[in-house]
Image 1 (cartoon, rainbow, N blue to C red):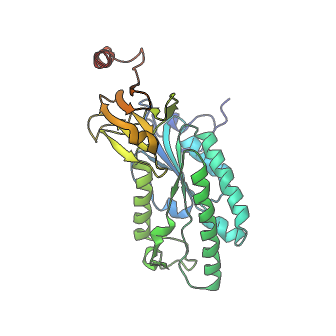
Image 2 (image 1 turned 90 degrees about the vertical axis):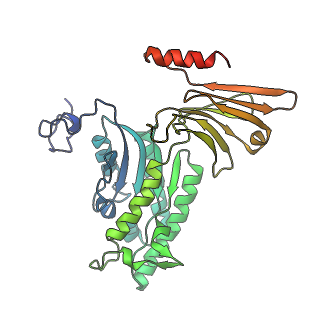
Image 3 (image 1 turned 60 degrees about the vertical axis):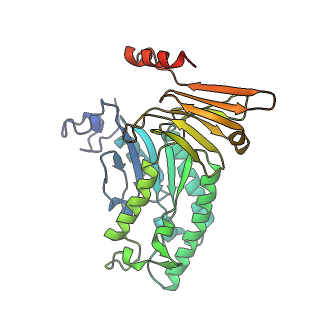
Length: 324
């Protein structure tokens, strides 16, 4: 017997996509791709800003009860393919642990590991903790703890694969001063944001959710360049990452197309200096030519269609490969 609980009607024995009380609402037979937001009360105020966002936030949530809220998120996305997961917690943990930032750091690390386990193919966005409005000694103390944890979060994101730092803290500061107009005037705790604050958080989260992912799979080659499959960046171009690596890519023809195909190369600084030319043939084929120590070398990266693909797609791929 399936003991998982439906999040629509709270009944045990079926999932939300099969809920008889809301037929068709969560039908995912089209294999929809969604993003997930896991947060507390401030994120609950954001709502579900677009149809591809599952907001699994809950008032009072914190890193200590993260397992419960993650289970809710997993249940809500049971039949979906999840592209990105944003974790936006920590305010309630600061209230409880105050100066014990080490304890919060441990909880944050554990939460990231849990998300990576539950959504092994998804990119994780770890948000910094937003400050509180107010000038009391207690609030200043709590904000100092939040800043300390945020420094740890930034370092954690730098060393963890597929985890990106989403800096919400700086959204609420201007010239080192907290922007009070972004907080709810009726909230004496200084914790809750207002409409302006929500809009700014939405924009920052939108940057994370809607930015293309660099790659799903990295294939080693005998040379410096790394071949990338499933880059999922539309059109073609060259971009430099924070790591200093350069990606050249070839994706779907139009910028508005679905981000579902694309190939490319990830180049070190040395490999980029040796790059003579490159050709974005299609969303499945890209070539690059390098001036190596002994001779000029061409590398072709392809991502061939499966046997189940349309005959026209397979024929187009074969035709484009022949002259290479």
